[in-house]
Image 1 (tube, rainbow, N blue to C red):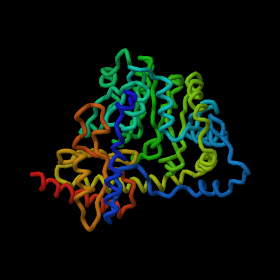
Image 2: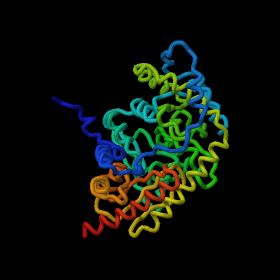
Image 3: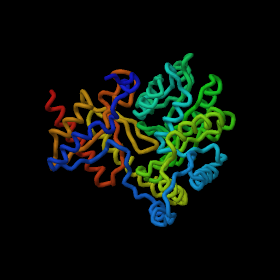
Image 4: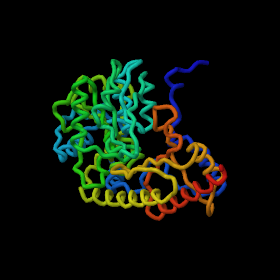
Length: 398
């Protein structure tokens, strides 16, 4: 039997591929601290569950393919508070930010096309691009430079006749890089000058730790036809299981093409949309509290990493991840060993090996992404386990 070349070019997620090893470790009685996945432990606002409990309609019916008006209006009001105006037709509700990005790429990419993405990047970008028949053209960044990529020479060097878009996350996953207004403006100018779409994955917008003003590519009216925003309630409201995202663009033709895919998949879950609309009632105090919590965790993980001999990392400025270069030969081998052979007090950790966050072959083999989504005491213990594991692993492989 034959399978498509597109799917054969895809890889398993480095974030989830070690799940079978973790399950076996749990069967052996080990406790695992999960630093591999961005699943926050911050409580979801109560408004979500109240909306579910108060749902009184006699039939759980299909939602409209573009999304429920109550959720779309909640999203529009959220952006109004950022000084950005959208009409209802500019917002399409999707099954998580992942579907929003997949739909967008399938609308703008053909076989052989390329999109520019700074690396390291969220690994599923690779899968979404390849399923659409395209490839990622990476822009190299380095921790010593704070993973900065909004540099004209870097971006323009990657543009060729096949380039269709620039895709980036801000704040960055996995680097924690936060772009300032001048950098966003530069990316907007480059997209305009080279007739490209500019895709901003902005699902971590609320999580910035230097007092920066929240930004979005939606603030630039001169690129309204080429700006595509990927958004979600998953991280913003600690509601990953709701699977509610948004594809936001003022490009009417793009929205019309996206609707072909949305109608083919019928609709997004009705009850989750109703409950997610209620999340937007959370006031600024909610975000202030959550932001302070993640800032403390960021400080903890960065301090702990900084004292492990041989580790290289850059302090993340946003999101809740850090990319770290470890003094090991291969992060995948190290992760397998940590789950199968290592234990301290019958405890170990899971990481996300770094190679899958790159498009350039050979890069990231000795790197890992760590998600600081655990409560303070668990995060401290997990980092101590990482230090012990590195020390023991290096002794075994001398």
